[in-house]
Length: 263
Image 1 (cartoon, rainbow, N blue to C red):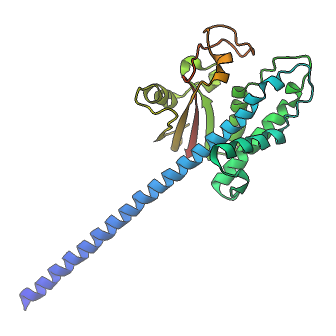
Image 2 (image 1 turned 45 degrees about the vertical axis):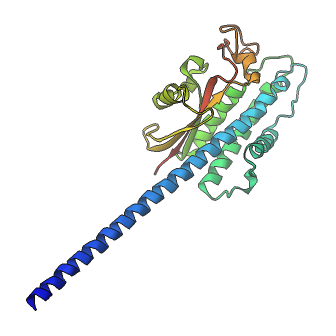
Image 3 (image 1 turned 135 degrees about the vertical axis):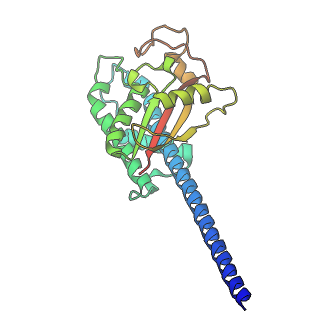
């Protein structure tokens, strides 16, 4: 009887230990699944913000001739107009209606912050772009993107950040120079032979002293870029933006870097 009693105790301990181990394993699996889901959501939001910035920048790129028309005053490129066109570009790129994004969510609030930033930048630029008698206004797509990123950073209030950058040799505005992480991604990932064109690079990495999910998307020169950024290298940019970089069609020319902060 003593043996049976001891056996029962041993069995009880074994079963209890097995249950505890199983519960711990299940909790561990849940934590991993939760972390993966969180990372996937952060990546989705980061891509969303980068696509939205691109959509707005494309409006400025497509209207450079109009902006620099010295014979015309009011160009009609109001903040509301640019936001509307940016939404159209975003829908073409994603087949998604921005107006249907729930504004009460983090994504919705960041979307609104980006759109408001675009409107503010364009509202402030009206006297410049509508000035008659001046051909080159200096209101380039990269300038627009930089200003929108700065405005967005303030509105996002420590939740997210976005920045236009480029390989060090191709940066005109030093404020857009890549940080150490961005530079490493550009040089060791995007420029490597095996890197798929357009593929983003992501990593959990500190940004400005805070833990963050970071994403950087490479951008390549298309034909319309080469008028200002193509060959011959060192020649004057016809729009007055600086010296030509000597870029070639489909060459890596820039990147959009996004950080989603982790609390």
